[in-house]
Image 1 (cartoon, rainbow over the protein chains, first blue to last red):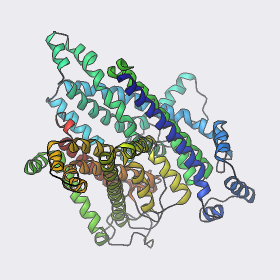
Image 2 (cartoon, helix red, strand yellow):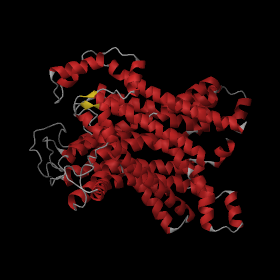
Image 3 (cartoon, chains in turn green, orange):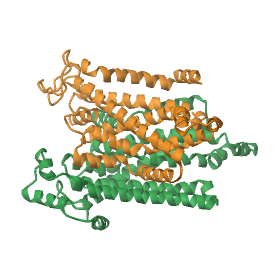
Image 4 (cartoon, chains in turn purple, orange):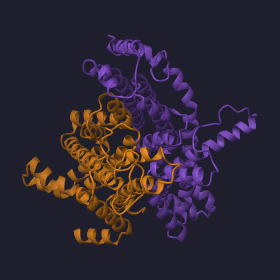
Length: 325
Length: 279
């Protein structure tokens, strides 16, 4: 009985994600087709971007072709995503160039903020009521209220402009011959500011969530039992309690993702980090519609994939789900 | 009960700080057009001049008064946030109540729909629509609300199911109360705390989104907003004008998001029964 409930819940989630992916693809397919009449002229006449006659004809042909949704999907899965008018490059190529940078930045930021947020949250809950815990919760709540735009610009002004310790833009120093070690250092130096900004944005949420759920878990009876057995406190904290306190961080991740994606876009743009966010910003500035479409669809599917993966990790962490299946 | 809530709120430093900040910013929003000494679209001043008694924060690169721009920008961000929060709340409450009350197929269909919407990253849809159609902020706000009601609907539905089974509601039904009476008299008022939590969370998200999207250049450039001011000022960050042009919108935006965050945290702490113990 219990098994069927759990597995049907899992099934529902997967179906919801697949449907969400289809919705995203369908929206991406149909948005250009809802545009009124001669939108190419209307849109580019009022902007500083100029197209030559051939480009204009191409773009118009691209958006007025009578392609079915099936053909569109086929194109999408064969990486045939169209052609960027601003960069004069296939979109799949632009995205695959930008993707590693975004993965490096966001992956590191999430891993670090989850790991340290979790540790700090567990320790804070254990020391509940102390001065350290109170200041921790207070300062993290304040930090939770600072948008990435603000922290990114302030860090940029202090560390790149005023002190000059770190580069203000880019992901690597261009046109320089470097050994592998120098290159790694160079990439790290460029990564530092955007990474710190995102860490400051993600850490407070992870900390506060973990602390909140850990405080609840520590009140449970099995913790009392563990204490009564005389187990060392480190073992109670991590082997017994923390595992249960990990769950909300995973379940709430999906809800916080709207904030995170938006914030990451802004941070990449401010530091001109060569990832998908900056590519999207440039595409918007140059009104490169096929490129905007490509990045939006690709990154939405990436978000869906990460969320789905977390759903499985959740099942793996939660002992109740594990026993049930 | 209500007296206790009021005392608990006024005793909570987060609520007091958040409310004070919100009042201050609310004053700027309401009185903005009268406080601004110039039309924010007037481009007749000497570009990049320093602050003076005439122009408190100086002039930007386009010859516009920065202080007036700032006041209009705050106003636009706040209005966008409140409108989105309100719309998402109304839709979420209605759908949550409908699901809890009718159950069955209606409930099932709407909940699956909300699962799908929860999975879709709303910001991506907004970017796509904004880039292709250049719609008015009102339309974007409604789209954002249309994508973000599910969390509220789920919370309302869950709590409404609890209230529906509670003794006093069963008693009311026993005495012959109609469905409309129970929804209007019991369910809706008793779920009131959830409205506040949902509204604060949604308004916070919407203000953050508005600032970010206008920073990315997805709104009409003639519409003043904090994000757009930051993005323009950032182009001149190496000049000595960052403190009067770049910092003010950043400060305002940060205080705004902080105010809403503090209020949201405080309300959630007070009204969410599960969190009551934890915080």
